[in-house]
Length: 219
View (cartoon, one colour):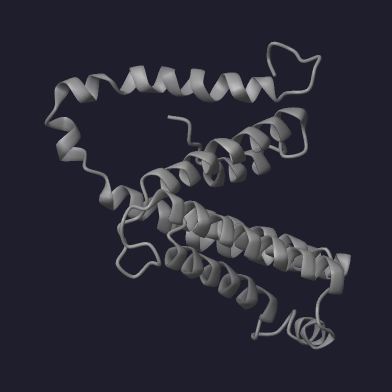
């Protein structure tokens, strides 16, 4: 109930020009905590039964250590980027391929995301957290790119994100959804409105608490 599909909310908020408003900032701040905190807690307390991972069985202390290792890795890379910037040869390649078929910057960001999802899988970290770590690194890298190139790369990356990965997510969610199982249990189906109301309360109250004061009833 506490998790939030922040990735599905951002496109709608961006289309409505709400990202930079007080409501948008409140939704994003509470949504980040509401989405990733439960996933981290589940990963630590429940674990991932993944034989290929570093933690094939449920070991909370090991899971905590692996999560901390992942965050230290991301934090260390962000510190290194902020301290030393981007290597000059990478900047030259990026500028030279910005309007060509090579599209180095876009390919690099996609590869970065897949790499950290893979690293997260090995460490028993949720895929969404791995992708989130890649996003933090990408944002740190973008700070060292000229403004005009940053705008172009951001636009192209969003096209890949919302035109490819987000539809795949929804298609996969629809294909794996057990609709016959839900319809076979009328009691469970009848609880959908109850969970909807609980969702509004559990996510709405913390979201409203992060809103800057004073605020209107509409906000």
